[in-house]
Length: 203
Image (cartoon, rainbow, N blue to C red; front, side):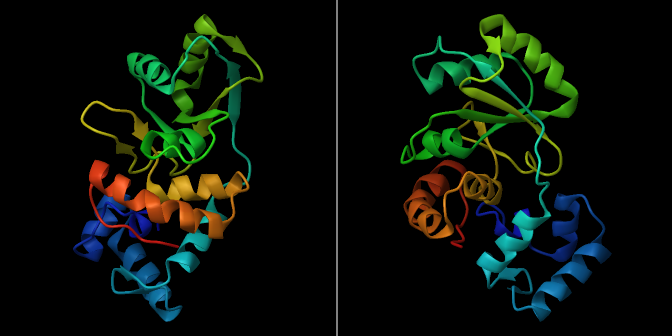
């Protein structure tokens, strides 16, 4: 579902979609057929992105494992990005920070970053070297399903952000309503397309 909603991916066939998603072709064929009956897609073209997004969002776990840290020595997000990249571990920004990296419409009061579960303790050691654990302005969240799937890098050496449906879902769970997100991402699509390429699907 994330791939079908992703503005940077145009699947050529169901077999290619299955390979990209890491599932069996039979599962993709069955799922697409089910979505077609509901009027969500026609072939591999999304016809009702709002309905598809609702299914995607409801499938996500309700609770997220996370840790918060207080790190106030950085006067800009760019310096924090440089630090995270030096750690040499996989990550993806989401919510306000990911949106701010692109267009800076939302007030970024907290940095949210997805990391791999097996690297959580490594992140903890690095972050407690430069800040304190508990509360604060940085939240490290464990990727439990597909949160880091098909993440996007901004530029050749820039920061990584989650894919578009994941970002919209995370902002929605922060309390930002769909009608606001529609207006927000209507302006977002041009910047996003120019940075990572591809089409854009509005909810």
